Amino acid sequence: MKYDLEYVLDSALDGVFIVASDRRLVLFNRACEELYDISREDVVDKACWKLSDFQQSCDSISERDGRISYGELGSKKERMVLTHKEGRQVWVETIYTPIFHKESEEIAYVMGVIKDITELKRAEDEKERLQKELITIRSELESKYDFSTIVGNSPQIIQALKLASQVAPQNTTVMLVGESGTGKELLAKAIHYNSPRASRPFVALNCSAFPDTLFESELFGYEKGAFTGADKSKPGKIALASGGTLFLDEVTSMSPTAQVKILRVIQEREYEPLGAVRSKNADIRIIAATNKELESLVNDGVFREDLYYRLFVYPIQLPPLRERMRDLPLLIETLLKKFHHAMGKSVQGVSSEAMEVLMGYSWPGNVRELQNVIERMMILSKGDRIEMSDLPGYLVDSARTRSRRSDSPSEFSDRISLEDSIHKYERGLILKALQKCDNNKTQAANLLGLSRSTFRYKLSKISPELSMRSRVGAESYRRKWK
Ligand SMILES: Nc1ncnc2c1ncn2[C@@H]1O[C@H](COP(=O)(O)OP(=O)(O)OP(=O)(O)O)[C@@H](O)[C@H]1O
Ligand SMILES: [Mg+2]
Image (cartoon, rainbow, N blue to C red; front, side, top):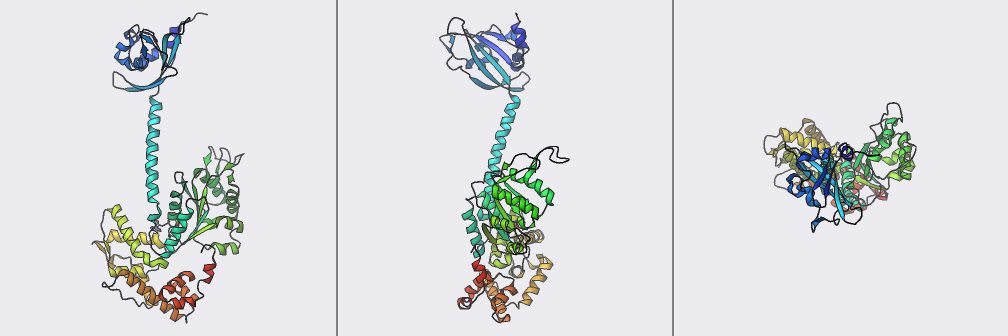
């Protein structure tokens, strides 16, 4: 059956053109006319190197001794941008194919097939832009969550940072223990961003935020049709954290059912999204956090013992702020700088009177509470120092009551250094507490709201002899992470 080749090619969506061996353009289909924005009458039967619009395509067809050489042609693919008369730019990709003489190995023609790739190019450019942006964001995150952002020089913080930096490069499950606002999530992020998983996501799951049924779908995700209303599939936190870290916050709030589910993920490293027929691999590192005493919850039967042992592989204790008051001035200084950047308002420091109140407060909300108080004081402050009048009333009252209760021996003077004042203040409180409790160190530690190990440490600094005789902290010493 005879057919009209030109008619067939004119119906093609892609542009097709043919150049003869003398570089004369012999065929130029309708799609080519649109892509090059020229009519075929202006180009067909003309030497293609003389056609300015067509120059670039023809330059790609190399010529040797007046003949088109096969050499570079092979499956040559080329991209270029064509500018139309009205200024519109079209990205095209051309594939050149040599067509040989029937009787010889010489090239008779070269056929070019040309495609509009403007949309593809736009998508590629966007992908490249997003990849660059991702690299910038990642490096910002890495520096934002560096260990150095965790402020404090107290031995407890130094110990926590030491343990965290040692475990960061491993895949080990980490358990962060500390009161609310002590920096558990901050430390979890620092561990993640200093681990080989840093370029993959850090995903947090607050275990207390979901009832049983929702917890499962949050954690594992679901397939389309898994339940009424599941009109499309949704990845769970495990899938979202793939290759990275899953942060299980408030892990003690998990229901018994949720505990069983998470235990399986930790043991088998496998899980099934709701409605899925096959198990999936859970490529995650787990960092868990609790603000409750996990051991007692295990003893009370509220928390599974097997899960406890799976999670409590590498515990790190974050001290409450009241047990590391020597870090307070440094934290305040850092926070003042942070809010200075954010608010553009410069407050250089805190008056000695206001500092004494801040030092006397018990900070139940820890660093988060301190952060909120500093932010508020910065907004209120009229001068370049935070004064007593800028402090929230409840804080002043509470610090005064506390100070009265402990019969504070502190004499805060501008003439002595802050560090000395803190030590003097602390020493007075500890000795006073011991005196009140007839030298019973456990009771004295309780009175001051300190753990026995912290009390013993502080006492050893004041009086090594007193602390040598002390049994205080013996139990905490036996704890496996010490
Ligand atoms: N040592 C620290 N240095 C600097 N900022 C800190 C420190 N500890 C905590 N913060 C800041 O305090 C706030 C609370 O910290 P984070 O959310 O990590 O506490 P958390 O222990 O997870 O509290 P919660 O148990 O209530 O969730 C954050 O803004 C964090 O940046
Ligand atoms: Mg938290």
